[in-house]
Image (tube, rainbow, N blue to C red; front, side, top):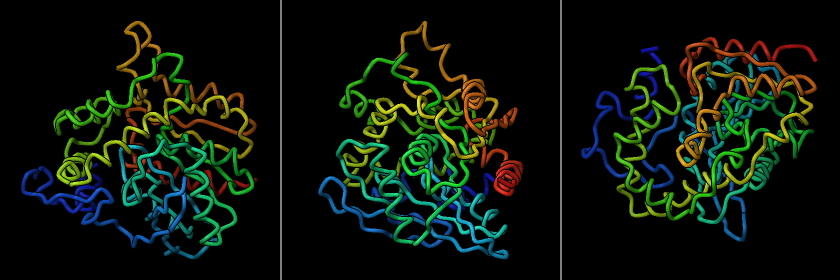
Length: 334
C-alpha cells in the first residue's frame, strides 16, 4: 500500500514534498508541466466546429506481444496518468495499452460546450482508427465506466471484453436528485478549498490508501487554480457533472452482449449528486456492489467481483489483485 502511495506522488512530480502548496508553480489547464509515466501523443479532432487535441498514451508490450490492445477510460477526478500500475502490468503481459485523456480532461483540450458520452465515444473511435486498432478489450473506471458502456453499445464490433471498475451510473441519478444549475455548481467548485476537496475524495470514495496517496490529485487541482485559464477548466469540469446527470447508462447495461466483469470496491458507495438529493432519498443511493450484482444477473455474460475493504480506486488500492483479476478475465476463452 505504501509503495503505491509513493508511486502516485512520484508520478505527479510532487515527491518528496507532496503537501507543497504555494511553492508549486501554476499548472496549465492541459496539465502543462505535469509529467505522465509514458510519452503523450495528440490527435487533432473537430467537435462542434472546434479543433481540439485528444491526448493519449500508446504503450507497446514489454512482454511477448499477444496481438491484443486494452483501452483504458479514466474517471472524472483523475488524469489518465493514474493508470500507470495497470499499464505496466498489462504491457508486461503482452498487451498494447492505449490510455486517452478524454476531451475536457487531463492533457486534452477543455472546450466549454456541453459534453456528451456519444461525443467522447466518437473521439475515442477516431483515435482507434488513427492508430489502426480494429478491436480492443475495454476497461473503464468510475465515469469512464459510464463512457465504456456507451462505447460498447454504440460500437459493439470494436469491443471484445468489457471491464467496469467501480463504475458510476449503475442507477439513474435523476430519480433521486433534482437538476442543479451550472452556475451554482461552478461557484461551489470555485470556493471548495484544498482541504475540502481532500476530504471529499477520501469520504466520497472511501479510499483505503493513506491520505498522502491522493495528495498529488489535490495538488493538481490547486495548481490549476493559479492558471489564467482556470475559469475555463472550471466550466469544463462542471459540464462533465451535467453529462453524468443527464445521460444515464444504467438502462443500457442489460443490453450489453460482450463478456463483462464488474470489479467493485466493497466500501464504495459513491453516488454523484447525493448532496443535492432530498435527505430521505440519500440513504438509498450508492449501493454500488448490490446494483452491479443485480444488473449482471440480467446480462448475457457478466459477473461481479467485490473487493471487500476497498473503496472507489480499486486499481490503486488493491493493485496486484486487480491486475490479476483483470488479466485472468481477459485470458478466458470465449
